Image 1 (spheres, helix red, strand yellow):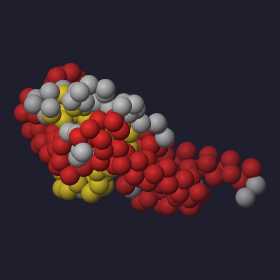
Image 2: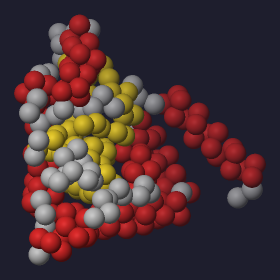
Image 3: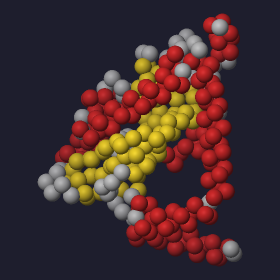
Image 4: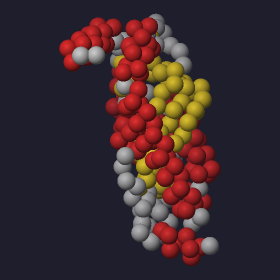
Amino acid sequence: MTSKQKQLLFTIILIAILFYADPVYAGPGGTVAKAFFKTWWGKTILALLTIIFLPLIIYMKTVEFFAVRKAKKELFKIGMINKDFSWLNLEKNVNNVFTRVYQAWNKEDMKEVSEYVNHWYWQNQQSVHLDQWKSENLKNVCRLESIKKIKPLYLEISDDENFEGSKIAFSITANVEDYLIDRDTKRPVKGKRGFNDEEKIWIMEYTERKWLLDDIRDGDLSLQFAKLKNIIPEGLGNQVLNRT
């Protein structure tokens, strides 16, 4: 494919996105997701983009695979000191927080998850998104069908004795339904009905011996997190030896 042909192809793709893109909608975290790739045009272009960018996709998956493996290896060592960091316990806690946040979001009451989410986060979501939509006579329908994958991408482990303040970025893929409806007509005004797989980056913080949701980022940032170098205390190895 010549340079001019490539330019023409990307121009066509850009025009298609601009003219056929569906309205956007927001899920937990207030992150905005495009509904375009769920349309016929979107699926066709997505298939084309997958073929074009296949080498890049393979690269991204490879980087992510090694990042997850390395993160789990570090968590195994930390879990020998603090069971809240062992993978089975950690995955269970993340699953629990994820599920509860979706339930609270659908009920339009983030106070329900105040013990699972840091104070700034739940207040921000309540006032900036949920309360604002109520004032516009809109409701966010946000349902969770199932959690498909939970993968640790990046660790920031504190040097505190109990690892207080440590943060972990997880890539979470879940089957969700997420759209805005008019409260009176019950008709969707942004987004579409139906469950689809969505990937998000959930950042969890270890606070007072509990895992709390600190922030949510778009799934497109997974490669950036996977490429970050984990921050691990230098004396961690000695702590593990002293406990064994």
